[in-house]
Length: 135
Image 1 (cartoon, helix red, strand yellow):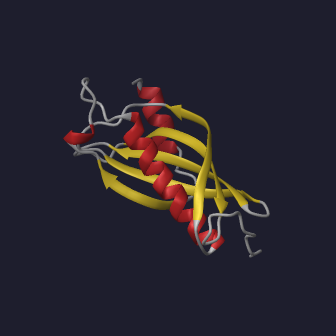
Image 2 (cartoon, one colour):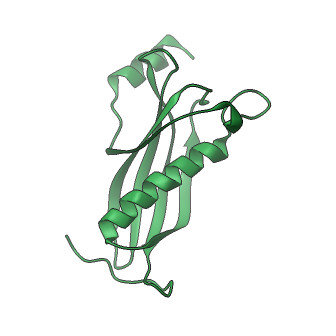
């Protein structure tokens, strides 16, 4: 990674609220020693789900992931910090912006590793869409 990119990340702050924070472990790696993108996506889905449940005040399910962009790899020992920001709320659906940042192992360097827009739908006990109460 170039020094310019590192400086840009250091100057930029994550957008949204810290929702999930976890450490990348050896069991989560591919053959190259990088953390599986699917593991990162799972952490992002969990964070988005937490934000969706809190906003909708009940059950919510993931229905779409749009424009997921992997920027940098996550490595064993990195602390993955996932931030969420509710972008739009409809009658029963929510678009939630999710960013994942890595605090690199044994350093204070923080770099954005991926971002995506997740869409969740609030559901009732029978699994049918339900209205989300206004704030």
